[in-house]
Structures are given as C-alpha cells and as structure tokens.
Image (cartoon, rainbow, N blue to C red; front, side, top):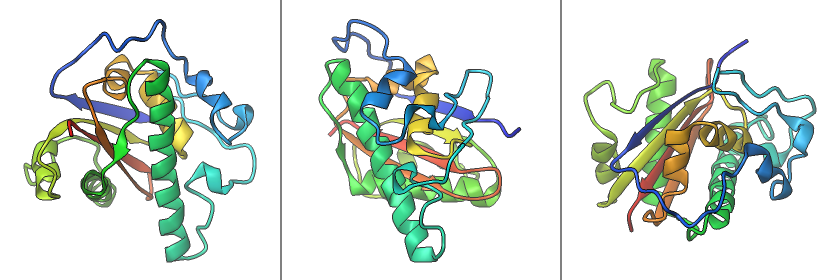
Amino acid sequence: MPRTLVTVMMVAVVGGCGGNGVVAAGDLTEESPVPVDSFVVPTPYGERDTPRRKATKSDGIRAGSGGESRTAAAMRSAEDEAVRLTNVVRRREGCRPLRTDERLRVAARGHSAEMAARGYLGHESLDGRSPWDRIKEAGYAYPAAENLAQGPRGARAVVNAWLESPRHRTNLVNCRLRAIGVGVRLGVGGPWWTQDFGYR
C-alpha cells in the first residue's frame, strides 16, 4: 500500500495561539461535506486514506477527471477545500482565518508540479531554490512556512495528515500567519501537495 509522506519547513515555531486543546483530525468531519467514514485518517506511520465510495466534487481530486479543464477545476476545488479546512482548525485555536493569496498558490502549484515531474518530495528544489526563493519569484515578499505531502487523495486527507504531525500542525495554527496558497499535482505516486504560508 502506498504511503503518505509529509514534510515541513518553518521560519519559527510560535506557540500560544489561544486554543485550549488539541484538535483531533476527526474534528473536521462536522465542517466537511465528505462523510466521516469516507477515509481512514492517516497515521504517523504512513498509512494512506482509502476512498470507499465514488468520488464527488468535495473530494477534490478524482471528480471531473474526464478532461483537462475539468481536472484543473477539480484540483482548484481541492486546493480551496484544503484552505477552508485549515481555517476551520485555526478558528478553533483562536487564530484568524488565512486569506488565499494567488501568488502563494502559484508558488505552491509550481513546486508540486516539479516534485511530481521529477519524482521527489522536498522543500529544496533540485535546482537549489528554497521555498523562500520560489515564493518571492511568484511576487510575494513575506514568506513564512511551507508544508508538503505526497499521497493523500483529497483535501481532508491531507489536512488530517498535517494535523497528525506536530510540526506541520504548528504551521497550520501559527496565529502570526495571514496568507496561504495551496497547490496540488496529480501523478504516479502522488498526489503532491504544497501549502505555502505568508506573514501579510
């Protein structure tokens, strides 16, 4: 069975977001249009979610895969849903919701596409660029953090995977952050997910 891989990059770890407890991955089910039993929540040991029903638009990835434009729309829907679910967690922790910044989305999509095309998972591009380089090249001047994942097949699955990792979760609930961009890319061994954050 393929594994779910996640990786994280942070500028600084900032605690004290005002929450009074840990948000379990299952807590997202009240907010998500996907039924709670649709996926197995990823574990720290790398088990991947397994769809047990026909995919729908809210799954984000498989729906609309009949043509390129429908696939692009489905991927954008998955990206937007990952942002929405991230903001659900942030609100419960007392943090302001993040706004989507298209420049961060461009940087995130570009990195996910590169990882899918070249078959790796890592924050540093194979040409030596850092996340900060890629984000600034996309026109955004205040990069803050980056989460990566390989394998989760939907928005809720990837957010759950990040929540299961303390370091990734720290980025999701860092109250100093203000902007987000998520990019997903399909491919053999994927999907590849990049979640870029900014300070403004």
